[in-house]
Image (cartoon, rainbow, N blue to C red):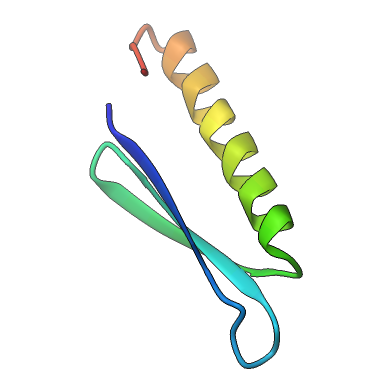
Length: 61
């Protein structure tokens, strides 16, 4: 299962966003006050996906 994360920003309000793609599905999350906060969220999000996949008996690289 492929995974990618792209960080964008800051926007006009100084906020950052991330686009997370996992297995061909893409989600965008916004409103982060810093690039580090956005990247920390992405790491936690991908870790949770890996945990859920493991519980479901799937393999995630």
